Image 1 (cartoon, rainbow, N blue to C red):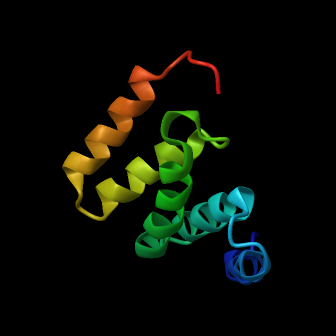
Image 2: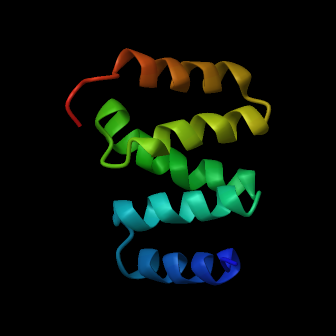
Length: 93
């Protein structure tokens, strides 16, 4: 079984030392998502999403961000994020 609690501590520590670490932002957002902490998941996945929009280094961040928005009741924002995925399908990452 994965220890999401331990992982969040690790990624937070990485981000204290390197706040622009996109990998750590993505993994922290994903860790919060998998531990059902959707409020924090939205915060970190949004940072990855904002950085590069459709050309994110972690394209699944957009997907998880949209799912997080949906769970948080932000349906229109979730729809826009999912449409962003559809519109950019097949474009170079």
